[in-house]
Length: 199
Image 1 (cartoon, one colour):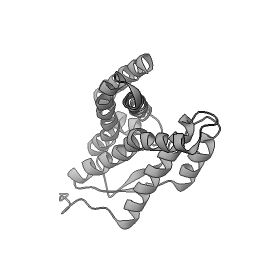
Image 2 (image 1 turned 60 degrees about the vertical axis):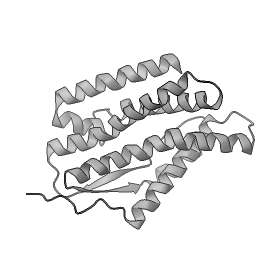
Image 3 (image 1 turned 180 degrees about the vertical axis):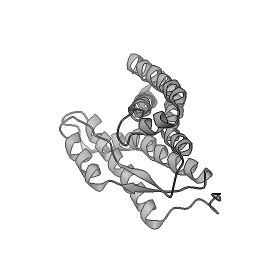
Image 4 (image 1 turned 90 degrees about the vertical axis):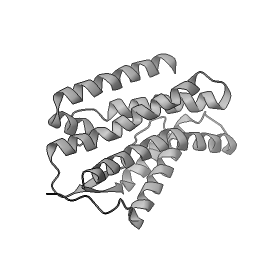
């Protein structure tokens, strides 16, 4: 029988990797969203907005995996993908965005059901964040911008991560439960379609 961990913990390396991934992802999105020829002041505003929308979306997505793994007594640790972080910043200058900041690696034998629930926790967190940002979409000024980016990016993250191939969360959820997979996929797709209609 697996025993619960005595307490969730973050190693020094993990804390560094989480901060690195948050900052690099926020920089990439700030570059991507920056209008051509905009100055440093505009970039810094977009960096802050990206940090609390896209960056926070990725950060909480990974922390959700770790927290739910902990609830099952499974140790998980986030490792940043440094080469992808650098690449995401570089290609953002060319008007494209790739966001693969890293992943939570689980230690030990994880049962199929546990793996599925741990995996769906990330996209589910993005759904919650998207809905939290939604009311701001209909406000004005900088709050509207925060709402639009937060809602849109998190809706994309929820749907994108449910792709049922390779190392995507969707593949592990589908292996665990087809009803759970298709039910959550329907929610994520509907949310994404609505995001495209209002943003």
